Length: 179
Image 1 (cartoon, rainbow, N blue to C red):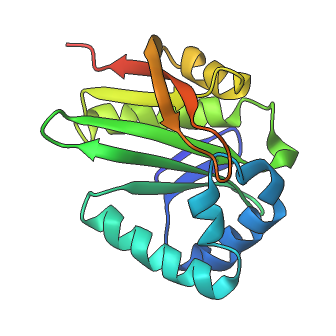
Image 2: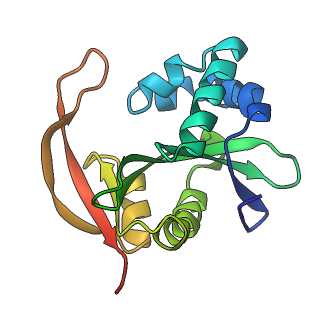
C-alpha cells in the first residue's frame, strides 16, 4: 500500500486489479468515453484489462508512466484511477490525469488523492513541475487543480480531440516544487 486517507487507499496498479479495472471502466463508460477513450477501449473486457494492467505495471517499473488505483480500504472496490503521465525526466515534469466512479463524484476524493500523489511525485520521484490539463467546462477537474495549489498557466489550443468531435482547447494548470 502506498498512501491512505479517509478510509481509502492509493496503490500502484498490479495484476490483481484487472477484473476490478474492467468493471470500473465498463460501469462508468458514459463518464469516461470523452476524456478517457483509450483507457476505456483497452478495458472493455477482462482479457483486455489483463493485457492493459501488464503493460501499465511494466511502464511503472521502468518509470515511463505511473498508474495508481484508488480503492475503498475495507471493500477494496476500485473507485478511481490516477495517472502520472507525459513524463519528461530531463525537465522533471509530469502530468496528472484522473477519473472517479460516478457513485463517488463530489466527495473530494480525487482532490485528496492528488494532494497525496503530488507530495509523492515531488519528493519521491523528484519531479519539479506537475501539470493538470482540463477543459474549461470540466469544473470538477479545475477544482481538483485549484484545491491543490495548481495555478492556471495558459490555454492550450486544440490540445485534445475527443473521438468523432472537434479539437478542444484545454486549460493548463501547474504546480512547482518549492525550493
